[in-house]
Image (cartoon, rainbow, N blue to C red; front, top):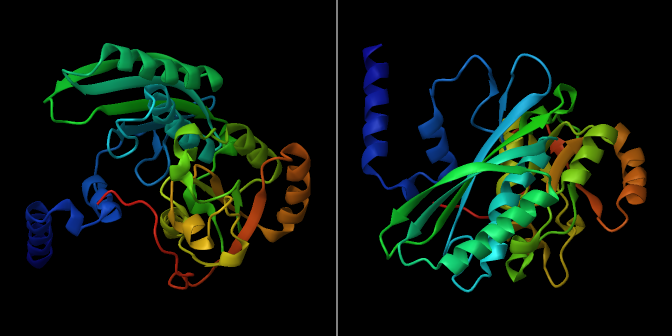
Amino acid sequence: MASSLLFSFMALRHSAIDPVSALGENELVRLLTKGLPQSDRTLHGPGDDCAVIDPGRGPLLLFKTDCVISGIHFTAETDAALAGRKALNRLVSDMASMGGIPREALITLALPRTTSVQWLQRLYYGISKAAKACRCGIAGGETSSLPDACPVVISVAMTGEVPRRRLVLRSGSSPGDLVAVTGRLGGSIRGHHLKFTPRIAESHWLVQHARPTAMIDLSDGLAKDLPRLADASGTGYEIDLSSLPCSPGCTAAQAAGDGEDYELLFTLPPRRAVSALKAWRRAFPRVPLTVIGIMLQNKSQRTPLHGGWAHF
């Protein structure tokens, strides 16, 4: 017991004095969320695209929070309406990855005092337009000032709902499941990361007709998000890089590593794949659906993928 306590103390002390970049994003999240208190209504806490709350009856509730920051997620030259659109739609994409629909959002702004009122009005125009498109209400929010040298921070918290039988987690994949992805990947920096449409309609079709075993949205890129899905499911994977559906002018390496595609990556048993692919083409003739690999039993057996976005 004493040695265990000493080890825990040393690990905590080490993490306290090292910069977050020494840990990396995934390890930092594990460190900060380990042992957090949960209510008895929380079915799934940290570790998925959204937290899942069981209200006791009716659909399950989805909770999500995210932020976009000037200089990280958009530039000073970006139309504020597009920045607002992106801020909200990132969470809508997370709702889609779990088979859910967005309901309400709260907007928190942290701003330098020199921020233009006109810029903020344009920002809220983009937020409002995106919310109307997905029928999400803006229930309120908060504002705070920042020192003038700081970037603008736009934080969004969102609630959603999902029917109990249609909830899809990252952790449901099994060895032998096929890996598939919607749309095309790579080159998002050319504008897609600001103008993407969350795959809500496609998600609802998938959970009804293809019944994915696991799903995640590609916000950080295939190279980062597929390992997260595999870690949650306890599997490995083999990916055919030549099969990746690349955006025009992009290579397979860019498709795997550029990030901010906001497409749906999911797994499903082979027996359902053929019929699902045929039906998909009729339902979404302009959106490709591509099988790119297979999940494996051996957790350490994984096709090398490079790139993807990492905050630290």
